[in-house]
Picture 1 (spheres, helix red, strand yellow):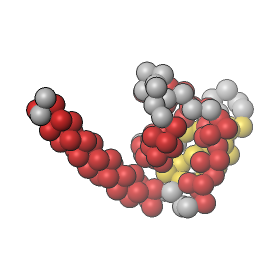
Picture 2 (cartoon, helix red, strand yellow; picture 1 turned 90 degrees about the vertical axis):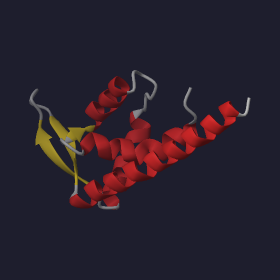
Picture 3 (cartoon, helix red, strand yellow; picture 1 turned 90 degrees about the horizontal axis):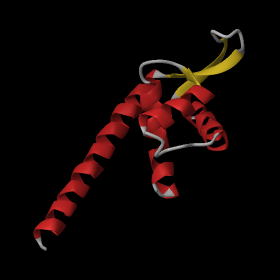
Length: 112
């Protein structure tokens, strides 16, 4: 089980990474997160939509209404140039944390 704090901390980089190559609507984002993580992260719409609004307010994404392939109106989210830069920066930060943790775990295992 992944802690709520870790899920909250990883929300921005996950959403920005998902939107990096293509726009997406909310339900599609939720499905992609479940699929990519093998169900380890199963967000609710109650968690996702306020966060998308926050990202939009911060200028990392923008939204637009479009007719989907099924003919329904959906709100699509698109990453902005600022969001792309933030995604790259988030990736660098998370990789640094990952590397540091790997070092600590390796040191802990070698001291057994």
